[in-house]
Length: 454
Image (cartoon, rainbow, N blue to C red; front, top):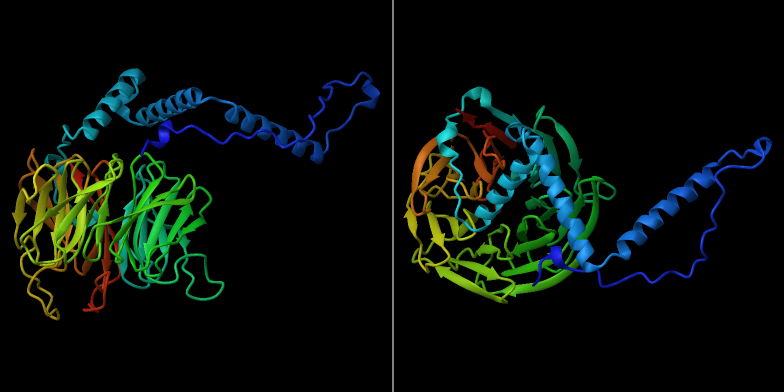
């Protein structure tokens, strides 16, 4: 499947049969008869400008479009690098450095060393944001790090400002008539495009809601899944969307066309986690089938990886394009490599035994994992009152404990900012997928943790 970057606009507008607009003289010959422009003329002039801009893009060839998009991409990189203090002296070197980093990230040959800069945060670096009425199930940072979005079992999505840690926008659910345009049930997952233009969310109502973040409004609803949607993920630097569901399928959607693309089958149990980076190669975990699937969209095939453990695989994150991390309900953290059929490393009882007095299980269920792609920093959440940070070696074949942060409740979702300076935790009184336990002493909140860099 070709990249969206190289797609040409095949459908050309051939004209709508409207008569050509007559040119108006700019200066009147008679100063006494000078005309004052009306509001209607201003609107017509604006419409003419919009039509001319549209005609300009419609008449460009595929090569011109690629050149224009490349220039826009380099300009965006230059603006982003100018915000960095280290890049202000030489923008050309900054762009070259950025392009080199992106190439190394895509080839999985570069590892950012973030663990050496992190120290255990103090109480002043832990901020709890309360706004959801029920358990928080998922969190996501915007690519620029300015906002954090959180979803909850109450059917709402909240945008938090990272500068003042205040609630900025609420995307309400629609439990009642006229209450909102959002989900009609619990929300389990959300994700944001790299350009911060769209946000996708999925949940109990089996629908994927697409939100326009520039207008702060619902723009489309994708239908097709037959069961609860457990994960949504945008491919980096594109508007291609992947969704996973308990109906054991993965669906591919085109946000630019607002259309369904295809459905992928292969799992034997509910899909509980999905992740994707730059390539058209999403990765999923299949719950009780104890397998990981790597979907090769272009080749129309998939790779299957299995473990001997009988536990359920609950969550997943991609360390880079070739290495993955999964968490199971028996408390194990497992690393995988695309070139090996079996796990490269397994850490049993990663969170020890649970310390919640009213839970009936002895194992600390790994509920969520997250990382900064192409880095050595990994975080995991469970129900043992601790958020744990781990350090990966260069080959991603081992995990060594870094430190832990006291975090009561179910850590249903985790997210790391792109620079690795902040962690967002979705804390709930209940597990995100059920109501097996209820912790009355825990507050439903979004917890922001600042990792102090030395």
